[in-house]
Image 1 (cartoon, rainbow, N blue to C red):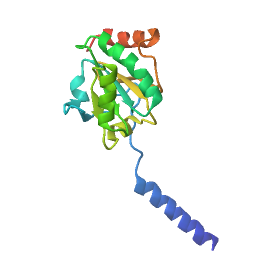
Image 2 (tube, rainbow, N blue to C red; image 1 turned 135 degrees about the horizontal axis):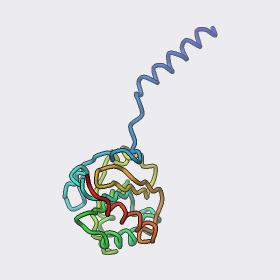
Image 3 (spheres, rainbow, N blue to C red; image 1 turned 30 degrees about the vertical axis):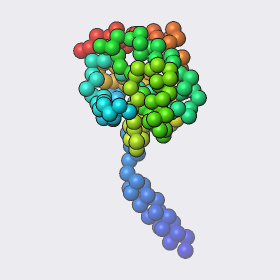
Image 4 (tube, one colour; image 1 turned 90 degrees about the vertical axis):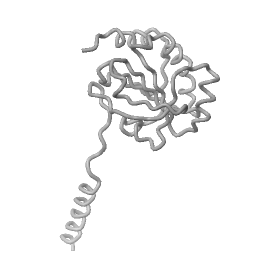
Length: 171
């Protein structure tokens, strides 16, 4: 009886291990950032691979998330400060209504686009565990920084880090 149970258990484990397949790849700092194509709330298509040559700031957020709402004004200050020919800020809405996001960004005077990830495919590709999460992608398309939680983006350390990436030459 024990051998039978062990055999059944081993077969079940083997089936589960092979049926599930390998876990999906997640974004890794130092590796190329996962590419994506998403629409923003205004209907514009954004393709990450077309943004090579610029530093890309990607922020996953939601209007129901207090730390997200708190960091947005400092993000807008960064977005207004950085040279638009070398820097782009993309925000990706997570489990929220686009109309609420549009109303919020209009209220704070934000000029960055709000992209919609309706099936959370991009969030999954990046390994997002919650919001806010922010990813900094260099001009070559390599993921350089990952931040979990809210950040004061217009603070000295954050600005120095972003300016460093903007100042780097493209190869």
